[in-house]
Image (tube, rainbow, N blue to C red; front, top):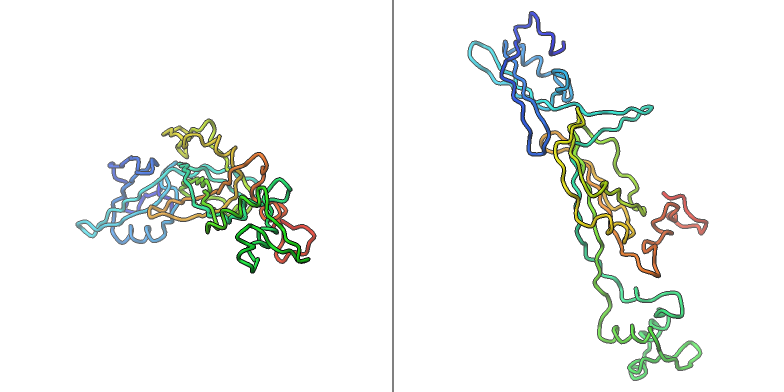
Length: 295
């Protein structure tokens, strides 16, 4: 039985509806029904979240309390229905609130991170050979004996890195930039766990502005700013998708949280996340030497 057909049930809609905006800036409606307690109890047991109580007002939660004369009052807290766009069998739900944030995460990088694969960069192989030199006096002069018992000397960038190692430095502090997007829904979001572990660029808000809209009318309820400089930060880093979670909050709404970790690009390294390990065709595990499926 629909809630707009109450003839001969003894249940009467009360004229004291409450319209309000909750702490998440979502519009809510409280609709009260009075009638025989047993009848209201029976109907409340069959009530499901999302049931339309009135046009544009869907049940979110409800409370039944007993009043005098074996009667009761059923208070139903409603919210606007989610807008949906159906393509085939999939349904995309709109958010009613979106929040962006940015912070840093410490990343201690090995001193060998200064080594490269060109002659102009520090070389790891001679560094490790020098570190394994058993003769302390030889190693003290930044020299080592190679496999042919020939004495070799470190030089250039390799020597500069060796001097840091000699001081006991084995790592250097760096930071990932971490961008997080939180989207709020009245119904479970359509998907999650998307692109995790892959190079993936965060979709920034247009012009750095975020608009919270009414999910029924599309009316903008509140406009907020995204973190300053977000667009330029995104373009200066390469990003790895690290989080895509979905959870229900205590009000029965849903939140999807996505995070990306970024490494700053440099002139010599426009892809700091190794594409063999994190790219669209990353290596399979175990690796057979024939590329990867991206799984």
